[in-house]
Image 1 (cartoon, rainbow, N blue to C red):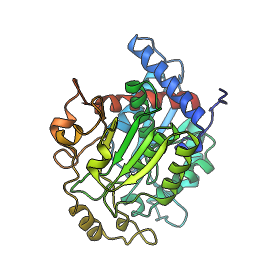
Image 2 (cartoon, one colour):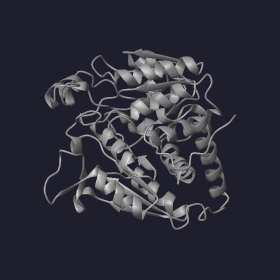
Image 3 (tube, helix red, strand yellow):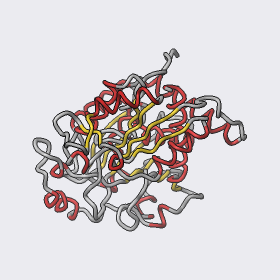
Image 4 (cartoon, rainbow, N blue to C red):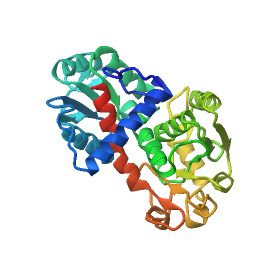
Length: 352
């Protein structure tokens, strides 16, 4: 296997990388995690390097895993709240004395640090699907240092990395693993697509047998589904879409139920910019909740996954979330959360 150096690369979407490159990232994450458990320190890997983090949206796991990761690697993470700086915006969206064009922000930070990480989706881009990802690409166009995607409106590549790292830890690999990404009900319709889209992209890339389950009207982006079919075929896995929750779960090894928004919430031409129409679709499917009874349909050694925060009592019951020990199926949500730290340290080490 040959994998070229990743130094200087942006990390904006998993589709920018080959399977071999993703496997290299996972292998480095495994090494870093194992050595940290043995109290072997890595504060010489990114010594004196700076990561600028721009958060248009709130965060618990992402912010703290990046900050902790940079500290452990010997560098420093700067937290930038767009409301406390001149908010970076695309050309044509400038407002005098309150915003600054992305091209200018990118070139300034490029002169001062070693990478830029950005989270942006939903309200900051008026639910114009793809606008946030386009902004991250614009940052990457103007900055010579790596730009890292901490979640946008299309992809959440670091969460997806943590997801497949967790699967690899539990099952030892990916072949023959049935991976179910399912929609689940939430009272809030403001749920981006990035997590489920990255989850199924990585799972099909790794050759798992992937089922996407959701009610009618909760479709993900057509280009993502098309890419999943190509990945599944190329990597000797499978990919199917079903609209029955219980049918999807039967015999599954990985159960990942999570809410995501319906298409009408997006701006035209993708959607109708209608929260009301989106809410109506959600309210028809309050029975899409992950319970103990649902988990009993899965493989006896199955794992329950969620990127967190989960809407307890809606997406999933407490009994499922908190069953972190055997026998039988278990919840691995806190393993997943911890693994954000290790995969992000791996990527930062390789690209910075």
